[in-house]
Length: 207
Image 1 (cartoon, one colour):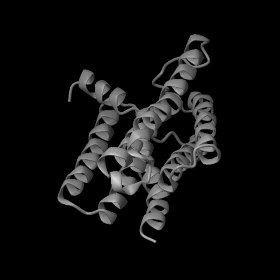
Image 2: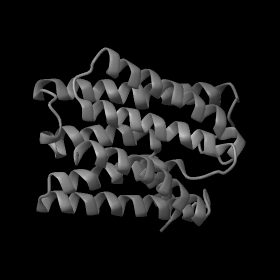
Image 3: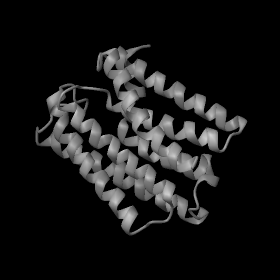
């Protein structure tokens, strides 16, 4: 794997993108999983993308411009604390807005809430250990798809699960190739994201 390819993979599947991909999974890969009306899915997807990707990205850009952080890659553990905290606040606001103002579907609300909780726990862990934010996010996505694959089993759904697992492995490999993390940090991030999300989604969907 060349460095440019590894960097491209890391950017395309950066943690801020994953919440939108999880929501798109619910809306368009497993549409029977939610009761969100078809005509509302695109507008809700855009709103979630705006609040969980674009606004936090602009916040990080502001931090970079003001030299509060020295790189978007955040190689230093301590330098990650402020950006992670800021993004957690944005995600809390998004989850709260959807819960109190747009409570259209329980699974959608749970997904946004679990993304927020995962990020909050990741931020706490980062005080002591620099684990992979990429893998934490991807672990949550794999957990969601794994439970959906059990609940709404089909051959395409099985292959979709394999695809997400492959993407997670690919991103983990890219992070290792770039020397952004050590193996235990990659495994720890995935275990955190998967562990937090799997049991909640399983309890909700398989009850």
